[in-house]
Amino acid sequence: MGDFISTTPASRREMLETLGLGSLEELYRDIPAQLILKDGANLPEGKSEFEVFRQMESIAAKNTIYRSVFRGAGAYRRYIPAIVNTVISKETFLTAYTPYQAEISQGILQSIFEYQTMICLLTGMDVSNASLYDGANAAAEAVAMCRGKKREKALVSACASPDVIETVRTYCWASGIELELIPEKDGVTEHSSLEAMISPEVCCVYLQQPNYYGLIEDCQAFAETAHLHGAKFIMGVDPIAAAVLKTPGECGADIAVGEGQSLGLPTAFGGPYLGFIASTEAMKRALPGRIVGETIDSEGNRAFVLTLQAREQHIRREKAGSNVCSNQALCAMAAAVYMAAMGPDGLKRAAELSLSKAHYLADKLGALGFELKYKGEFFQEFVTVCPPGVDETALLKFLEASGILGGLPVSGGLLWCTTEMNTKGEIDELVERVSEFLKKGGAAQ
Image 1 (cartoon, rainbow, N blue to C red):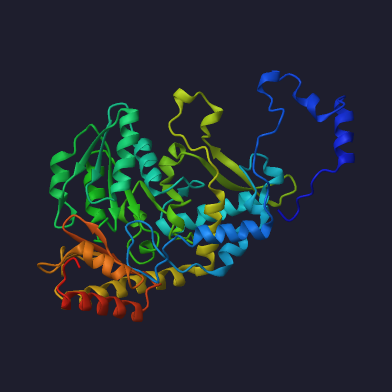
Image 2: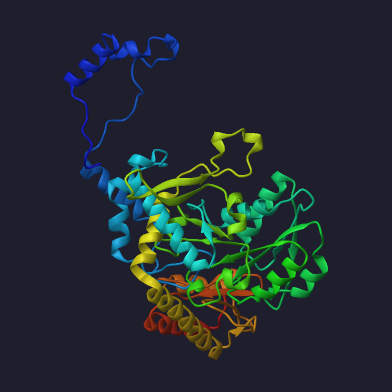
């Protein structure tokens, strides 16, 4: 850290004298002698900054970096304004931890407050907490929020992300909540199945928008059915898609959750990511984690405080309704800076580009015989079925040889994705490589 000042021999002597000690060894006098490493830890000699840098370069060179990426499935390569990393790299924010002492944590508290405010605007909900681990964790916590004494069954769309389903399943198993999947039909969640499955024991219905296959769901109909039977409606939402689609609030959701990685966080080999969760006013006291609020100090100046906090280390563990104990404030700040820099118009433009480029790619692949597996409306992802005789694995390896990461293999096809980062030239190059592969026979080489 730039402001780090190490102790000097004189300052160490002064501290020891204050403690009434004659040496550093006396600090450890209560530790049994057999536990002390008298000859040191036998660690290798330290390296210079130059040597460490070269070694890290050598390790990083083993990574495969693709020039073009056409894969999403929950983690998306998006444009990140330079100001995002500039702000979050400031050590004031980079080293800060949970702001328990409001009087000396105003900067951190305000950054969380701004993040919460923007999440509420994006989702159309009333209140947001200070973030969670990731989108799957947020979905699982939302299900736990809905549990009631006589309502201990959760209905989750089979078209949700597999990671979300498995995480929710794990939480439900641990807390004794029964989980059932609402079947899929033609790539979307079957509403008639929900009507047949819902009962007085159901506490919530979870639907993802867009779903795992990229298709647009009729969330409003599911919300109405859930509410008709006294259940809560949880809507998983892509934050970029939320800029152009109906918000969870407009669809009637009680809780909105999602993965915030698209909001200024790189794919980064899987994390750290950001789970956002927001709810209606009626459910705010069930939100896990903490909520920062705005108030005034004794002199009438604007100030920020931890308004609500359900930090589980404050209470008996067996009574905890959730377990959110890490500080995600840095990731939340990145999201806040990203949303502030992009603004409503920037977010909408990113969404429009993602959508239009996905349809352009789908049309181009369709001309080569790659039919859409599902005919419904889609946002930035879609599934294609390969032409007869085409080996999916061989195709993806062929593309990788050209520095292109192709679609993700899913049941019955390939899940393709485009974002604002995919240029028309990249899309045309992908199509050319696929065409070249087909001309060579389309099978394993």
